Image (cartoon, rainbow, N blue to C red; front, side, top):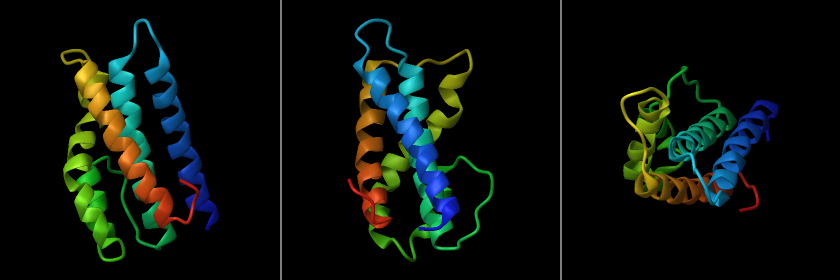
Length: 128
């Protein structure tokens, strides 16, 4: 694995760990944080796979645009389009006043992130 790919994976795992820890909190869960870190984990795994494949990408947070770039070498990731579109909104939506995530959104984001993370780790030859 390329050094830069490994760095993207490490960053993705950092977001995954934060999301997982927040899901264990029993009082005052930060639903916004769960959703944001779910999106960030998926984004960084997409960028890790693109990096490993030597496919250039910009500084974007649109997960669907990123998955579109990788479909030639990971065609089965088309199955994640809906999940990634759902997660993509959390890059910005709940980070500012005006909208907040609820328990259902956080649970959904968590599950979608976990599914995509497994596929991404498998594609990168990492333990799931």
